[in-house]
Structures are given as structure tokens and as C-alpha cells.
Length: 329
Image (tube, rainbow, N blue to C red; front, side, top):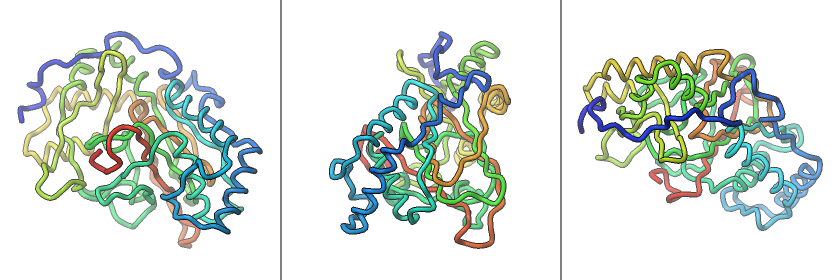
């Protein structure tokens, strides 16, 4: 594999990106991202839960066509429109955590999410639902940050593999303090880099080594090679996770080139700019959905409760209609 800095120049997005996708903090309105759960949806959800109590079905075997969920389908169609043509992130507000068990809330979340796209595996062992909580570990080469209470710096999910276009996070329990969520439009960041430092932006279209965190078949390469930005002539897509890139280059014993490091520094400075990103605190019962190719996200560190029943607990889902449902896609 040639050094990333020697890659041939790929096609780039040369025009400024307009519209709701390229939002900034000052242009973002609450109604652009918050999707209330109407009363008729809550009634459908209540009927669904009562039906499943009497007629249990494993969560991952559930199909929305088996239940009366017309109002919910309308709501989720609106939410997907926000992801595809709007801000690229949405918060569903919210499921009644005081009324249902964790398992029942997860079941509702599964069915609502299938109205966006098909759930796919998000780990090499094929898990379709993934618990995000603090295990007491610290971030390491093969320890994901979502299993710690440490800050998760700006990233998109699974850029080293076949990243899904949509990801969801159901909030079952919140932490005692901290754990704020931050979202940034990568279209807006691209616009700013195009204006301020076009040469560094061009470097982000060329490859980096990505650590695969051991999520691959035995004997496979321990890194993948991908750029940050790709443009197919119509759509700009992005993937980013600086830690995975740093470790990827270390694993390959190939230091990152100076231009590549400078380009990442510029990218992260812009994402860190308070004028560029939106910070909010998720509540129990809310569900955050992101367009994983268009928005990066961050989480601050947090302090949790001693009582295990009160500890922060989120459930993640990956949604993708293309490719196989397996982790490798």
C-alpha cells in the first residue's frame, strides 16, 4: 500500500454546499431537529406493548407490518426527511420511560427504527442492538470509547469499515452529571475549510490508515484505508475519527504525513468552534438519530450513579438498506 500522501487526486466537491444540510449554530432552530411524538403515536405504542405482553416475540424478529402503527410510520417518515434533506440529525421526543420496562422500550425503539431503514450488525459478532454504558474500562486500541465514561471526541461511527448511513441512540437512563451531546454539520465544516484552507481540505480527500479495533476475521488486515471526504459528483459523504487514524498509522509503522496531520488539526478546530456545533443534553426516553455520513458527533465525559439501576444506559442501532446485514456489509 502506498503512502497516503502519494494517492492520486480524487474528485472533490468544489462548490459551497447550500441549504439546511449546511447549518451552523446560529441558523439552527429547535423545530429543525426536535420531532415530538404525537398522542396518536403514543396510543399506538401503548397498544403495541400490551399486545406483546400477551403475545411475546423476540425483539429482533419483530416486523412493523404485523402491528397497527400508521401514525408512527408517518412520524418516522418525517424524521427520515430531516436526516436526508434537513439538518442530518433529529431527536425523537419522547418515549415514556416511567411506563415501560427497558426491554419494552427497546422493542418500541427497534420497530420505530425499522421505519427508517433495515437494522444491520454493528460488531463482528453480529449484534444488532448494542448497549452503550460505562464498563469501568479506559479507551485503548481494542476498547471502544462507548464502553467508558470518557469524552468521545468528534467522530462518525465505524469509518474503518462499512459505515451505516443512519445510527440511533435510545436513552434509557442518563448519568448523574455530564455526558452532553454535540453535533456538527460536516457540510458546513467542508464549506469553511474550502474558504479558509483549500489545500488542507484537498488532503482530506486522500487516504489515511484506520485502526479496525480487532473487528474483523482472523488473518484480515488490522487497518483499512479510507479518506475523510468522498464526492461522487452528486453527494458529499464523510467519515472521521482522529484516534482511529492515529492508531492506524502507528499499527502500520508509518507516521502520518505532516499535511495529513495539519488537515486533521484544521478539521477538528472547526468542529470545536462554538459557532459551528450544537450542544444539548439528551433526556431519558428521547431517541437521537444521526445521518452518519453528514454529521459528526461528540460526547463529553460524565459521572455516573453508584446504583446500577440508575446508571447511564443507551442502546445503539445501525440502519442501512444497502449491502448485506452482516458487520462487513
